[in-house]
Length: 121
Image (cartoon, rainbow, N blue to C red; front, side):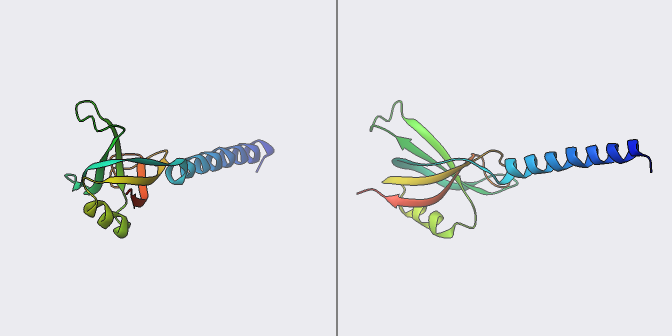
């Protein structure tokens, strides 16, 4: 094999490796983490092909005319979080989330994923 072919294959392998690393970061990487507090207005399992857990948190004042909404998803394997959200509907809660770069349709509609829920007293 000539040197040109070796360098071309090495360059191609490097490009594929960089693309693969970038792709894995976009799928599994976390863009941000944080906490949001408000009133849990809605939480349900929905979807036509892919059934996912989706929710809506009303943030800020008790103004129901112009509320600021925080839309979120919950992974199917977070059974304890799902049960708490079902129990706390209509109550003041604090949601701990991780924001993903990319989300596939079978994961959820939002790129914010809840991993912990606290009831605010």
